[in-house]
Length: 124
Image 1 (tube, one colour):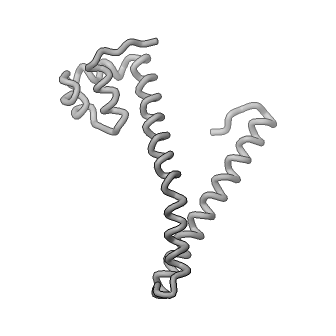
Image 2: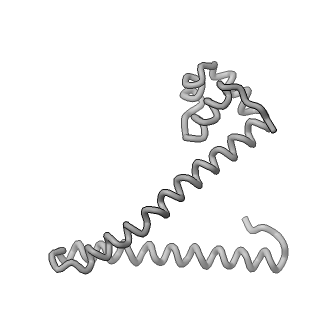
């Protein structure tokens, strides 16, 4: 387990959230060179990678949580007698386009799992 100083933890948090090296240095109260030195260390790189992945997972969870409400809203737009036809067409297009993307993603995931089961390698 790597023990980070408070400044390293602050810099790591800022970098994982998308801050530039300069912004992370300023926020952590260190020099830009210090940030560069920390980022050159394998342990810091690994922790930063985990932190970025955690940030992405959190953002994805928020998107997934809102997806159901978004679909309900699109459905209400589509079925409302007060919605102009051109708006309905746009809503239908958004709904169907994204449904196809989800289907394609699911098929790709299944294909990758099959490839892995056949040859034991993780697809790129």
